[in-house]
Image (spheres, rainbow, N blue to C red):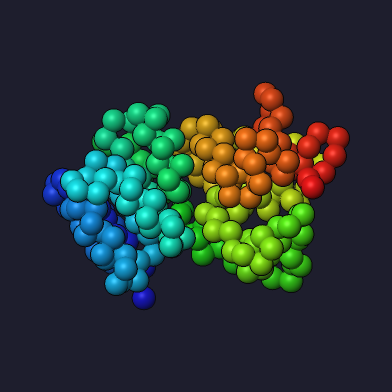
Length: 233
């Protein structure tokens, strides 16, 4: 059965180009021109990935992304007309997994769609025991995180970064290493997106994200687990 992609863009010409490229790539395509229509589709239909424009009438793309991410972990690729780094960062902070700047190559977009779907369908680590970290429990096999029994909803990228750090608690990972782990060499974007994912991850797993104890920043290098010279509480 073909995977279903929701394309949300108020420009008919862009929707037509994207729909044609995705259908040619073997995907089933559902489209919407408004943010509220996109949210209605997400509520009633099975969607595997969303291609979402930032500038939409009614509910804008940022808010649509935030609302989808509050309930679903489907991959979201943001489309930005301006190539503005602020837009990209904000999109990632709202929970987007990737972004493509207009004008874009339809072939590149289809490649990004396929890469994001591969990541989303990655086979869980069968047989790996849950990892406890203070009041957090991370289950690699189920790909879940809980705090005191309450679910912590992480995106694919956030979960992978946390698990990578947990598995090598004494190692400092560079941004390049974390990005290569996330994308297996297929990422074309800005390494600063790692910082955005980490900041969002901290907001979810740290008791006080302004004073993190689980994920520490190693200035000029990257990130590591726990406080320098110690371990998380």
